[in-house]
Length: 113
Image (tube, rainbow, N blue to C red; front, side, top):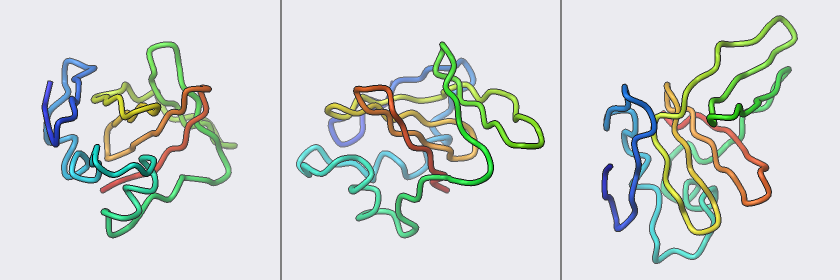
């Protein structure tokens, strides 16, 4: 567990390392009422750009993230870190892949590197 800006980031995988988070925790402020994606846009030079393309992302029962493309699927990526952020859940995977989940189960994925 890591506390950053009064927000708790929880390790969700045995190989989770604080280095996986990089600067990601610094993009969020509780005093800022905007949703997570808007805060990332304001504080991260590359902004929040949901990954789109020929494939789609799917979330498994343990919140693992799998990318399905027309030419096959990537292996599932386990969630490494998680933070509850108001009504959203932020999950960080390998390679800076970050997902923002809404209460209704919808989500967007972007790479924050």
